[in-house]
Amino acid sequence: MAKEIIIDSLGEACPVPLVKAQNALKEMEIGDVLVLQIDHSCAMKNVPEWARKDGHNVEIEEVDDGEWEVIIEKAK
Amino acid sequence: MAREKKIENYDVVIIGGGPAGLTAAIYAGRARLKTILIEKALIGGLATYTNEIANYPGFPDAPKGEAITNLMKDQAKKMGVDFKLTAVKSVELEGDEKVVETFRNKYLAKTVIIATGGRNRVTGGKNEEKYLFDKGISFCATCDAAANTDKHVIVIGSGDAAIEEGMFLTKFASKVTVSVMHDEGKMDCNEIAKEAAMANEKMEFVWNTVVDSFEGDDDYLKTVVMKNVKTGELIPIDCDNCFEFIGYIPNTELFEGQIEMTGRKYVMTNDKMETSLPGVFAVGDVREKWLKQIATAVGDGAIAGMAAESYIAETETFEAHIMQSAKPGLIYVYNAIDADSRAFLQTIEKIETDASGAIAVNRIDVYKSTGLADRLGIKSFPAVVTTEGGKIAQTLTAELTEESIKSALNL
Image (cartoon, rainbow over all chains, first blue to last red):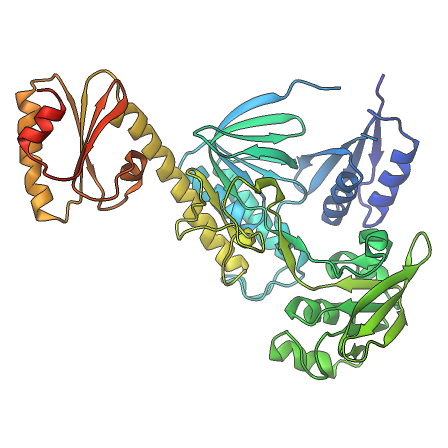
């Protein structure tokens, strides 16, 4: 059964959200989903970019004004 | 694990959420078209990478790019535009129904507006791939400047972006070394930026150089090896971070083979932002144009939003009225500024009256737009097209008389 992991990275500036996401993904199985909560727009650039480059599926929800959830499905 | 994609219908699908895409969204939304904007990362596009926007009219205090694009986003939302933050995986742009697919959704659209912009060009130096983004090579001073407080950074390039971002970096870094391809004293940036850069004590220039390789350990960049383009001499320079500002590449891979592009892969458009495919428009940095600025992107977006509206209205008229299949059809295509063509309207009316309801008559004035005539394949005016069962039967361009038209319609 695919797991869903939520990481609260609210209030944290780059590169903290990216590093947290990278570390979390290392521990995850293929098909698991990481939900990274962020509110620094810099992370909206580097996190999805890194995840897509690594071949994972990425979608983003704007939860509130200036608050996002980056949803990463580990694909490999 | 293939999962069923959710299918949604839209009038307008905009790919890319920079100033061009956002403006297209505002105009399309205001024209009451069902519009969705798909953005793969942060709404605002390249503008969000700039710390000060000094030349966008209406903002004299040079706000951050993001501040301006956030206002555009709010405005588009007020117009009822939907936003989806994900990457587009594939598109099928030919035909009346365009398909835009993302990871989870399949969007069917009457029109597509391409606003995908560009991305940073890289030097192509050895080992570059190994250190991109978070491993020592950055493209965004705004993002990474603070992390370089009291460090030594290298900037590659001498255009406006390179020098302005380099100046910004001097507020944090202890030293900024700039690699310039040209001879001493020559830069690609504007004169004001150049003067300020030359006077900045924290800035140092290495002239006539390009990057040869990037060296470091497994995790991080340590040294950039420059090559003197004149002497071939290799100059290793240790640094904590390297910033590349050497131009952009249009994001057009998704559309390759479907729409016409230039040799450098920019999308070709006309002044209505139309691409080589009907119903597909391109705006902003992705299209071939002379000046790439927020101000010009916004202009492109406005045109495409309205052009999409006009295309959809035209399609509806074309399908519902002009190509009606209930009766044999007579379509008169003319330019209203031509007196003879205007006079011939009386003959058309006579044919209509004589047929007493047996045929459906449409008159298309091409003065404002040749869109409908283009769909009928008509290039010279006046012309008459007859239809049978919703399909073109005959096209008459010469010797338009009551008799010739009646005979074409078997009246």
